[in-house]
Length: 251
Image 1 (cartoon, rainbow, N blue to C red):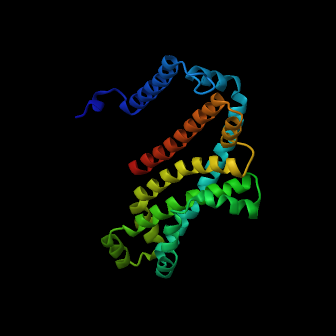
Image 2 (tube, rainbow, N blue to C red):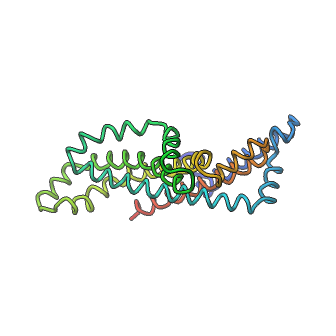
């Protein structure tokens, strides 16, 4: 048994302790080096900025959350459905699957200017961009999960003429759930990143846009405050997906 097993509520107390140590190190660095606030503000200054301008951060956090969740959900849904189609079609699996896997390594930021040309700026274009970002990890992970379904299970369903839909619902999907959730966790993190990139290029609102404007005006406290909100937002979304995974796995 490791030391962590003796810590009460280690799942929550250890991450909270690590965060507290990080903030203390940050504050100590600023205090000991006397670095000016316009280069590296202390946690106290960042917290004051968050409190004083909380309406701005709240409004832009909602925009980023809406883009990340909406685009991530659409991209994940289409990624899962595309994996279902590819797994059940040998022609598509051989013709399309290699390109979809290869497209995963394409930097999605290169697609943003293309969307800008054909769709223009705005929240709808940002949703499309985040959907593309979330599509590939869910597609690749789901397809791999479906492919790893034990042959004995499939043979058993074939022996009773279960049909493709029942085989999918009662064998392939349950067998692929760990891989699907692994893809969803990747898609969740990438959706937040995609929302920020979209707000840099495609929109004029959200935490990403706030970071861009604050950096151009050399306001590090505002930049760090927006990053703190963004970090909390991404952590909450990832935690929700992990919680859903545990609930589904338990059932």
